[in-house]
Image (tube, rainbow, N blue to C red):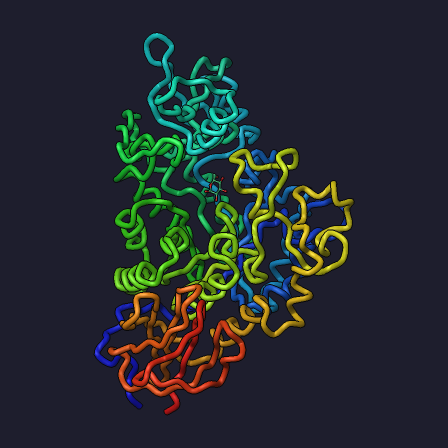
Length: 568
Ligand code: GLC
């Protein structure tokens, strides 16, 4: 059998664990499934939908925070790390859900938020009560600088609201002046000091220099591992590493007023990812996994950082942890960019690492909103047919789009993340089967198109997005070529086409994708070799089972991606 792209040496080699090619389905608990009339999702609701998650080929599920929280940042403001918010259920419900998931072969990953807590967390309540209580040093407290000035110029990531305030006329500044970011410092009269908050002021940053804090967070990990959790998605992790001297950040000349978050006016050298303590702290978090050698604990870091820094994180303990690969989610939709990003990614991942692909999450516009329905299908085929973990954000499988949430119903303080957090559209019944509450009592409104745009309708339509994801899940689990761990970029002779090969010792397959939305084309892939193959899957369902010949040229419709396996 001639090898596809024979001369290409695949560099990527992931360890042989269940995580290696797992589809990881992200559930945003508040929006997934209400089991009653409260208008918000619950844990028993998730349990009742595990069959759906399994149907997508999922080997794991990641739950965004479900811990007690005042909900000033969608649950990422945690008031108790070791319990379930009553709105979602109880620890027993969680246990039941994990057990039910395990029975279906689905692992459970939870969110760990190590950088900050809610200001309502008992740790912070105690810390702010005086300058000499036992937790006085658990958060980052600083005296004002001379003249009562802020301790330094560090800014809050959540400074987008400043632009909005300026546009509304609530913040007046002379024309041409830059919109100032929000300070990351908040004055606390009780201590007559400032505390640091890299995000909202209700999310004070923990002091990672304090060993007791590090121990407390590691205890949180142990708590969940002992309750059956298999892994963690670790939130905003760069922020745990800061300059202990709190030096001012330099200004960033790349900032564009009106286009960027005012937070981007500052470089990020001292306020996040500050070596060497940062890597030391990461290693400490990772060491918890070593305490459970028979559990195959997996960690995925959320680190929006330049690629070189992400690379350093990925090299720490590749067999345990890697960072989200956000590159393609943030890149413009063109074949050359995506080909380069894939080639680079699988080329640079350290040996033994498990890569990953991401098409969306609760912080970004949904896939089909960013790319449109047809290109979203191409993106799905790519993510499901490259090696590593595939993250699927709930609703992505339905090709769902962001909902236009009216201002009076908005919840997110940043003002742009509600649209991607609206409830799942299960069926055509009231509230799309999400909840039995009155529609105006849902925490966020349902997409008004739900009667026709829902998962139940899609289950009956072979051309639907859901059916494509289910087929992809099936192929990813069962096609030998995709069960391996190699990736080799191919070179198509058309700039709208992306192509790659997947191989194991005994099997191989190739994916060829047309990124153009309006051009049918015939493309040759010179370095693929003389492959004659059968189309096992296409974004265009009528193409299944057609024959294709790489030497003659592969014909693709606009927005068509195909998976080809050579016919002997
Ligand atoms: C992460 C979360 C985001 C949250 C932020 C602060 O980026 O994904 O939703 O607002 O951290 O915790």
